[in-house]
Length: 324
Length: 299
Image 1 (cartoon, one colour):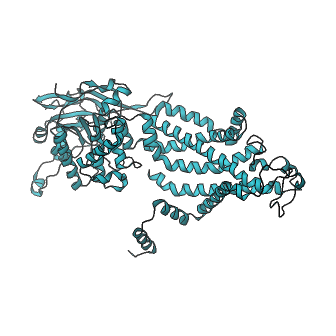
Image 2 (image 1 turned 180 degrees about the vertical axis):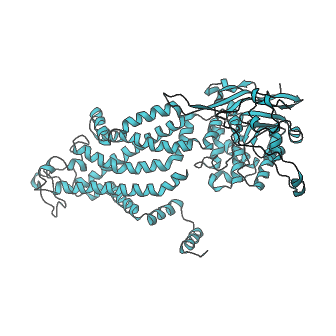
Image 3 (image 1 turned 180 degrees about the horizontal axis):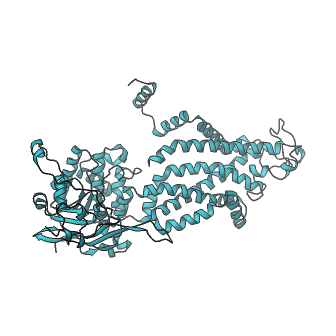
C-alpha cells in the first residue's frame, strides 16, 4: 500500500520469564506473535481484543517503548526498529500517545503549563519563551481547557480535564500518528463521549491518524474506519468497520460481538449468543495450529494442526480462519 | 453523620486559607509532638551556630594560661580546658562544625545516592544489576569503617571529613531511593516522556527525581544525626577535624580523658551537646518518616 502512514510487518514481541545474569529464562511469553497491519493517512484503525491479547504491547512497540523481538515498523517510509537512539528521537515527535489512566500519565510535580511547554522546548518547536506560552494557551484551547489551567497541577483537575491535558501534550509535538491506548476506559460514560468527540474533531481539523486501542466494542465501532481483532498475540480478523460488525467471518469476532448486549429486552431475550468455553490459554504455551481452536465452536481437526494465515477473503476483509 | 469538632475546624480552616506549608507544619506539630520537640532542638542548634559570635563570651581559640582547668564559675560558665580555653565558647563554635559537617555530608550523601538510585532504576537490566552489587559491597562495611578508609585515603580536615562521611551514606540512600524509583519508572508519565523523545538525563532529573522526594527527605534527615555522631567519632579518634578548630568530638579527646576525674566539665558538656544534637535530629527524622510514609506507600 503506497498511502500507508504506518506499516507493521510480522511484529513479534516475546518477554523472557525469569533468568538472571547467569541463568537462562525459564519460559517465554509470546505477547505478540506475528502481527501485520497498516494504517492509511487520516484513518482510524481500531484494535480490539480482551485483556492480555497483546494490543497494548503492539502500541508500545509502535511507540518504541518496547523493542520488538523481530519484525518491522515502517513509519513514513522509515523502519523505526533499525534506528539508533538519536535518530529515533527525531521520529518520535511524529508518533505520540494518549494513555488510559489520566491520573498517572501526568507528572504530579509539574504544572500543566510546564508539561505542555517541555516538548516545545526540547524539540525546538518554539524556541522563544513567549511563543511557547502562546502555543500552550493555543493547545489548551484546542482541547477545550481554559488558559488559566496552565498554572494548575494535575491533582487540581478532574479526570476528564486531565485526559484533555494528555491529548494536548500529544498534540504539542505536532504528530502525524497518535496511539490512543484505551483513552476513555478510565472515564465516566458521559465524559467518554466528550473525549471521543474531541478526538474526532481534532482528527478532522488537524488531519491526524489514530491507532485506537480499546476493549469496548461500541466505542471502537463509533470512532474507527477499520477494525482489527486480536486474540492471543495474533490478528484474528481485520476489515472495514461495517464488514466486521455486520458480517464477521472469524468465529472469535462473532463471539465477541454476541457478547455486546442489545439495549432492547425483547430482542435481547430472543437472540442467540455464542458463549465461549474455557479461558484464554496462557501466552506462555499457546495452542498448536490456530490459537483459538480449543475454544472455537466450529473447530475441525485441521485447526489444531495447521496455523491459519491471515488471508484476504473478500476485498479488504482479512481473516485468519481455515473455515472462513 | 454527627458534626465533629474536626469537621468544624476543617470548615473554619477552609474559610480562611492558610499557606499550605504553614498548615502542613501546624499539622505535623500537632500530630507528632516528639518530632516537633526534635525540630525545636534543631532550630536552637541552628540559631546558636548562626549567632555564635554574639553568644560566645570568648574566642574559641584564645588561650588563657592563668585560668587553666578552672571549674565552672562566673567568668567561665562551663569551665576551661588544659589551655585555659573557655569550654562554653568552644561548644558554641563547635555547633558550627557539627552542622557544617552534618548538613554537608548528609546532603552530598543523600543527593548522590538518590541520583544513583534513580538512574539505576531507570536504566534497569544489567546496569541496575551491576550498580546494585557495587552498592551491596559498600553497604557491607559499617559506616565508621568505610569513613575511616576514606579518611586514610584523603587525609584529615573539614572538607575530607565531609566526603568521608558522605561516601558511606551514598549506597544506603541509593538502595532506598531505587526501590521507590522502580515504581515511578512504571508510571505512564515516564513512558510519555520517553515517547516524547526526551533524553535519559532529562527523564531521570526532571521526571523521576522530583517524584522520589519523600524517601530522599527521609534519608536526608536520618543521615543528619548519624553524620554529626560520625564526625564526633572521627574527631575523637583524631581522624576528623584537627586542633585547634572547635569541634565537639575533639573536645572529648586527649586531655579530657586524662583529667576526666579532676575536670569532668571538659568532657561532660561537649558529650551532652553531641547526645542532644543526635537525639534532636533522630526525633525529627523519625517523625518525618512516619508523616511521609503513607504517601510513600500510595505512590
